[in-house]
Image 1 (tube, helix red, strand yellow):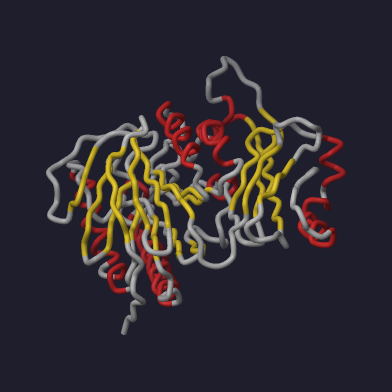
Image 2: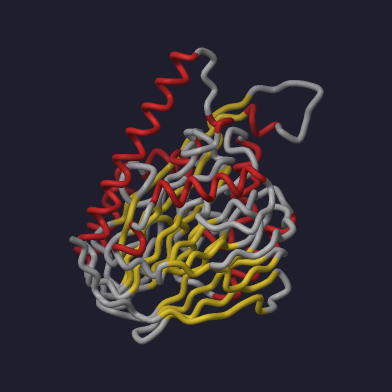
Length: 393
C-alpha cells in the first residue's frame, strides 16, 4: 500500500520498519485490489515523530437518472487513515499510497523540528470549498510555503453534502498533500459525521490543542452555542433537553480550555481558533447579537490566561480588534462571498472586505501577521511579541 514511503538519509532499518508497521499490515490486500482513489491523499496531524496519511476510495454507488452534479452524494466512501510513528524530527518524508510508479498517490511532509524554531502558519476562514475564489486562495497559500494551515470553520457550504466535501478536497488537494491542515467546526458543518470521517485532527474530540516550538495552539468548537437554527427540536421538552446538553457541553469545554491554558503558561505565544467572533463589523442583527453572546460566554478567559491572539471566521470580512491586550482577528473569506462593513467598533484596529487569508511568521522575538488578498496584495500587517507567563488566581 505504501511504497518508497520515506526518504531519510541516515534513518536506520529498524526505525523505518517501525514507522511503516501500521501501513504494512494491510498492504498486500490493497496492493492487489488497488481501488480507485476518490479523495486525497493528504497529511494530517504532523508531529516531531508522527504523521497521519489519509485518503478515501470508492466503496459503492447508486445509479439514478436524470443525473445531477450532486452524484457524489449517491456514492459510498471508504476512509483510510494510517498513523506513522517513530519518525525523525525535522525530516522531510515522501509517501506513496499506491506504489505503482504514478504520482496519483504520492505526497511529502516534514516532521516538526525539536526545540524552539521559526515557522509559518496560515489561517483560512469560510472557504466554503465550492466557490471559485477558494482555488485562487489555495494557490496563494501554496506560494507562501506554510508549515501548517488552520481553517476557522465553514470548510464547505453544506457539511451534510458529500459532493461539497469532494469539491473541497479537489480544490485543497495540492496544499493538503504536503501541509497538515487543522480545522475547526463552523455552522455550515453542522453536526455532520463527515468532518471527522475525512479529517484527523489531534485528540479524539471536536476541540483540541497541540504545541509547536514555543507556540501553543488551541482549536475550539462553538457551533450551536447561540444559533437557534441549529436546534431541530419539535417539542418544548426536546428543546429543553437540547439546551441542557448544549450547556453541559459548553461547560466541559470551558473547563478543559482553562485547564489547558493553565498548563501552558510558559509558551511564548498562545493562539486560539474557533468559528464565531467576539467582535464583529457585520451589520446583520444576528451577527451583532451573536458576537455579544460570545463575549459573554468566554468572559475574560483569554485576557486572564494571556492568550496572544484569537482567530475566527463566520463574518466574511477581515477584522482586527484589540481588547484586554488580546488580538482578535477575523480571517476574512477564503471562498465564501465577501460582505460589506458596518461602522467600526472602539476595539477595531483595521477592517476590510474582500477575499483574503492570514499568514503568520513565528520567530523567537516576534510573530509577524500579514493579511494577504486574493491578488497577493497586503491588506494589513502587524507584529505580535512574546508574552509574559500569566498566572491566574
